[in-house]
Image (cartoon, rainbow, N blue to C red; front, side, top):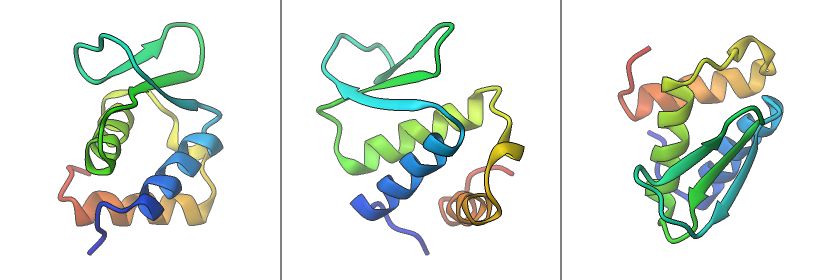
Length: 91
């Protein structure tokens, strides 16, 4: 089972990097804890969130977004699928 750790957060950030999406942590008045900059590949997450909340937000964005997962390397795709199954996210 995968846990909410800084190491797994880094691996999730690496998935975003492979998708050419910049993840930034900043303070702001976020309604949902994050902001997606329209027209750019930037996701801004509330910097005051703990590791668990950061992972959940980044997963939520991937699940709800129109992100083409075929651009991921085989290793990143396998890790992401394992993470989703571990956290019981729909496939």
